[in-house]
Structure formats: C-alpha cells, structure tokens
Amino acid sequence: MSNSEPVLALSSASKIASYAIAPTKPNAYHNAIELSQSTHRINLLNTAAWSPSFTHQKDSHGLRILEIGCGQGTCTQVLAEAVSPNGHIDAVDPAPLDYGAPFTIGQAQGHLAAGPLGQLITWHQADPLEFLSSTADGAQGPEKVKKWDVAILAHCIWYFKSPTALQEILSALKGRVKEVLIAEYALHATEKDAVPHVVAVLARAGFEAHRTASQENIQTTLSPVGIKKIAEVAGWKVQGEDVIRPEAELSDGQWEVGTVLGREFVENVEREIGDERVKAFLGAARDAVVAAVDGVGGLEKVRTMDVWAARLLEQ
Image (cartoon, rainbow, N blue to C red; front, side, top):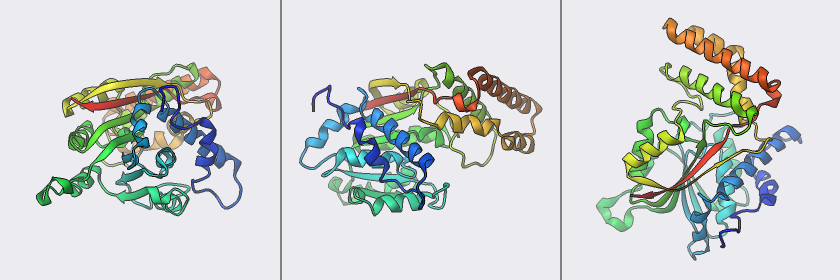
C-alpha cells in the first residue's frame, strides 16, 4: 500500500452503511445518518495518522484489532471492511446490551454478527481492563497472552468515568499491542458553525462532573493535549496526529447541542445540583450555547467540531 493509497475508498461508505441495523420500513433519515457515520470513520482510517497501521493487512494472518468502546459497531463495521478477508476484530464495550435507542447495543451487534462481516468480529460485553486481564493468562506461559496488532479507541474516551480510567487502559495495553489509534473530538472548530458544539460539550461536561451517577456519552472531557499527557504517563508517545474537519452531514454536533438546549437539561440541573455557584455556571454555559446557536442561524445550521486522530507507539 502506497502512502497516497487510501485504506478504504469513500465510495465504499454506502455499502458499509448498509450492514448496520435499520428500520423495517425504508427511512431516508436513518440511512443518511448511517452513511455520514461510515463516511466519517473511513476518513479517520485514511488520515496520515491512522493509515500506516493498516499496511499490516497485507500480511498472511491479516490485521488483528482490539477495539475498545465499540458501542453498536459503527466503527467496527468500517474496520471489518478494511481488514477483510483475513483480519479479525475483538470488539469490547462494557455497556448493557439493552442500552441505546432506537436500537439497543445488543440488537445492533447481533445484526452485524449475522451479516457478511460477522465472521471477522468477536463481540465482548466487558469492562476493558477486566477483558485485558482475562486474556493475559501468563500463568500458562507467555504464548497464552493474547496480543493484537493495534488497539483502537474511536470516540469512546469521553465515556470513561475519569482520566485515570484512560491511563489504566493505556498502561494495560503495553506489551499487548504494537500501537494504539485514538480519535476524539478536538474541542476546536475550524468551521464557525461548529462553535456551538464545542460550547455545548463544555456545558455538558461541567454538569456531568458534578453528577454522582450517569450513563451519558460525555463523562470525562479530555482535550488532545490532555490525552497526550495521559498517554505519556502510561508509557506511550505520539507517532503521528491529524485534525480533520467532519463533513457537514455528520449530525453529532446538532445532537449534542440539542441536549443542552432541551428543557430536560435545565430540569436536571435544577434537580441534581445543590451548589448555587455550580448551578449559576451551568445556567450561564447554557446561555452561551443558546447565543452560539443564534449566531450561526439556528440548530439546523450547527456542524460537528473538528476531530483529532493520533497514532501511539510505546516509549
């Protein structure tokens, strides 16, 4: 594979999107979402940061991937297409199988398992650290310790309960994978229309930092600088990094902003936050989101913020 050759062509996005679970009746809105999500992840694979890792797929054994935080398999199906026919993915996520809507994680993963790429994926409902521990049976010899070519954490770090959780996972990956690929929102907006997304994420992060229990998708907001500092402490160094501007069709920014604009955010803050200073901050943060949305012409104009992609090697 040459440096200019993509890992996957963007023209494959429609085929990959068709692997995902879908409503029984044709639904153009759902189809557009799946297409935009597949397109975004193909663009990640094709970055200068990520693409060198996939040159291994020409090896006879195929590329062996550990995907942490796989969720419903949105990135998993793109990875499977990239490593087909000889590669394999261990896809790990701790979330309950009945989590998610309109389809649960269990339904989405089951659909992919029954599809054309199903034989390339093994799904594991497990805490990442516990999974790594359970596959490191050194007592029976080093050959029993399961290893992979690459570990991938794509848009999952903000789900972690704390920065320590990321550090522990990266530490546990040492000696188990050759490299780690990371993708997370950059907290930066090349496009003015993506500024509301950045502000909304910080508002939600401020709220989540003061909650005792939550299953929200934003729990620990780390910037690229913060992630790199944690990686260094865990024994990894950045070999390459990119920042990409998501395509306009990617709706993540609108979804995140919508959750802050909604009445439920206000009600949850009022009910769960006792400290009047924190409550005032969150109210002001929401006001900033409202102003940012008005500044771009309404929620339907909001775009998704930039995404940071990095490749890590052991120090």
